[in-house]
Length: 131
Image 1 (cartoon, rainbow, N blue to C red):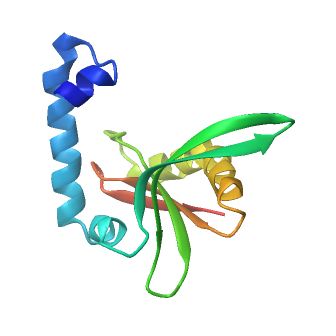
Image 2: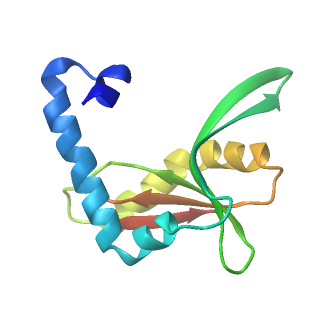
């Protein structure tokens, strides 16, 4: 809970936030895609901070997970803790992909333009790639 406090989560919301984190981790390690994302790889990193020059300004980006897969493909994956409670989880995932596409493309530019991009929703679990 100290990390949640450090990140500004109010005291009365920390227990629920900690439960959400644990549920997401449990889901990720039991999901094939989650295990693929979290697998130990040389050079893989979490919370990767980089500066990106855009429109004459330096913008800080923080990427959740960056790694190179067994085929030599570089990936940038953004985790989302959103949950869907409606009739169409696939439509929800498509909307979320559209919503976060620009953010992920910014991450790719920060990586030099050569990364594949993915959104991972461990609580669903769900996955969407971004072009």
